Length: 334
Image 1 (cartoon, rainbow, N blue to C red):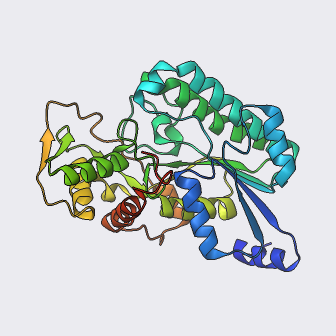
Image 2 (image 1 turned 180 degrees about the vertical axis):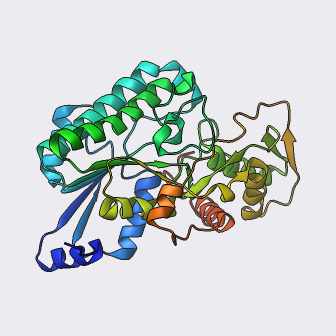
């Protein structure tokens, strides 16, 4: 008792007890970043396994059980989910609900049955109530319905928070969840039609540069967003796995003071791509929500000195990876 967790980990490694950490959805944006951080760190007392949809169908109980039987994890980071853009979320609400509920239930059951010591699931800020005050914090998840456009996905993800508390109170399980803001980085989805804002702008900006066209941004560029670099999120998720002991979720985000406007994002993208043309704003197009500010006070209470990668530096790293891999077959989702 009283030992810091780092000392406990050292003593555990000396006693030969090895952690086996299973990462579901392990080949995506966040999983790839976790792998990069762990490969640089080389922890002696941990073996990390990165599973993708090729390894198991997590909607199927038997397939999930076989994955757990194969690797016998002591710890799990659960990133796998059925995700999609606005159109898919509106059209396939039942599938988003059923598949995410099934996946999460199978993961929770296997972790409980096999005595997994820690489960960290990944939620999203889109699960928060549609009508809310800002900044949002961890206590506000269930204060009202989510936006109707993604209610299948959002309600399924909200149930993870409910399950964490129920498994803890009934079985003493150490299960929790993180809520990141807008993630970007290497290994993102750069598809022109269904990507998030930064990878979409990087791809469009690249094509505008190739064709010598103006860089057209939809909307006024005024809405504000908090972005977290995938490498920073990876470091924080690894910390959550090792150190964070609450069942209640934790928002992983830069602070409100680090919100950036979409116009600033576009300028950062142009700079990272060395785009010399003109940036224009199509103000006929809708802006979407002006701000979705999340409060990271809980994170800062635990980690007051955590240093986030400066936004422009993270953008440069992402753009460099995108350009290096653009013509490599199968390297980029685009």
